[in-house]
Image (cartoon, rainbow, N blue to C red; front, side, top):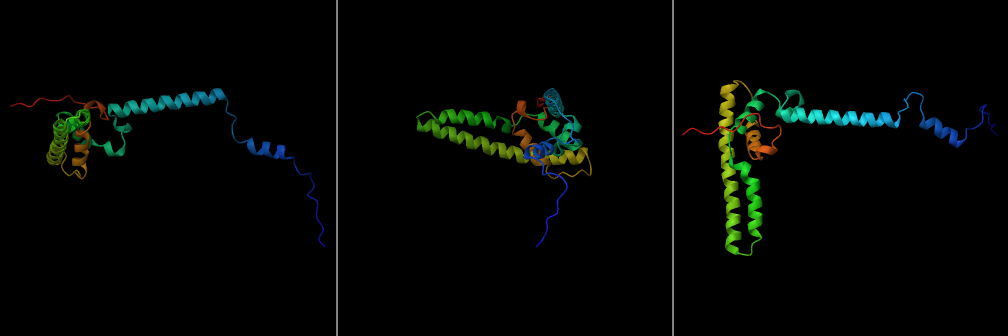
Length: 175
């Protein structure tokens, strides 16, 4: 037979054990006002970070947008018009035309959509080639992998929706 030895103190009540677990003497007690102030500060920090990103501050940009070559590509794309930036509005027009119950108009709208897509893809391929050559000339020895796709994807976004915002205005071609 085994004898049970006493632990020398009474078993704590459940309420006492739970309260000790919940309130640690190491964790500072945070009031509702402090939580509110912390949330407001975090919100202000996020707004400031987003504004810096949209301005194009190098420190606020994600790694895919950082560097002088990427800035050059953004400025190159933003300084010209492309058919890709008009693709989304064209799709909206096509959607409206396909609701019209005239098969000729519907087919014409769909042909317009595919023609616009084809022109945007060709423009993207040509832009990609131009960008790689321009970056090689401007920044010798810089890796150009991915810059063509970066430029094409930026050129397909509507100008006012681009992030970071365009830093240059559209230049008109001289004939």
